[in-house]
Length: 149
Ligand code: DQA
Image 1 (tube, rainbow, N blue to C red):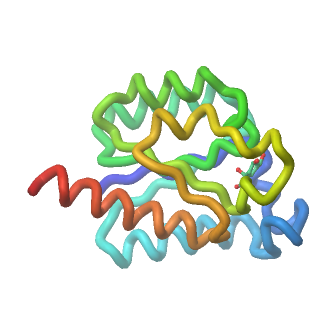
Image 2 (spheres, rainbow, N blue to C red):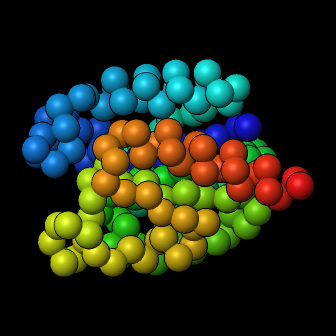
């Protein structure tokens, strides 16, 4: 599968920011880990990060027009208020999207309990650290297999 992994604001600071919550592995290492695990499973993986909402929206349009098989998104704080990203996920109809959070958002501040982007996704994973991205790849594999059955 051709999979696009999108990371939103401040995720490039993982390994530096709030290590007790996000861990000490730096962003570049996490990107390598996702690419390595994805490639092992036979996928083509592209990982992109932006601190800008509009850029993330444009990448959803790229996923649609360039026929990606799936998107994995960690929208960062946009999760909790970006109706524009919600709409972008919906606009890329037919490209299944999985939402991932490194931390367990439900065990944190109340404003993190609500995701406005997850309802546009096929599912959401949180609390498993960077392993969540690998679980999301597996979720896309399973979703595609069921679609083709
Ligand atoms: C996060 C959780 C969000 O609430 C937060 O704003 C982030 C990271 C996570 O991966 O746990 O930036 O998406």
